[in-house]
Image 1: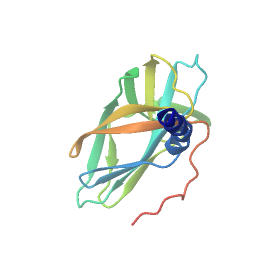
Image 2: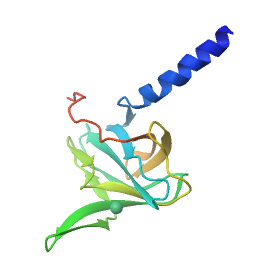
Image 3: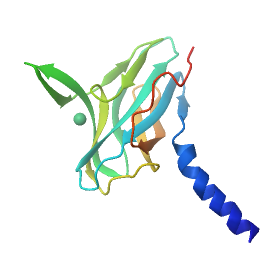
Image 4: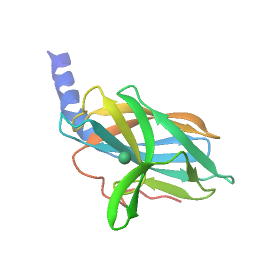
Length: 156
Ligand SMILES: [Cu+2]
């Protein structure tokens, strides 16, 4: 009976916890709050966002990404061309020494194609980011309805 109650509370807390910021360290890289917007179940693609800080003395480079939930993951950017917004694939994204790169809606993003199913608000899925120097870094992408509010998080 007590165990049942504990499990119930854990199940109630879980969605709240996953809405919180989470972060990852890999060498001199710090990856902040990977997230993805909840999409309709029929949507063929999704996008993942995060911020990469490089606290090191040398630049690193994001070379690609992969996830078991999609057939293909590409690095994309949004570009303005003749007044039209479109997105296109980029081969690599540099993370400058002592700098940061933001993946966010209307900017850089990881585009996921061939999803087996759309994740729902409160769920998480694994994503592996492949860096030139830091190597493969696995993060969990939090699925949420709204973009995370900026500035909830302090950095040095
Ligand atoms: Cu895209």
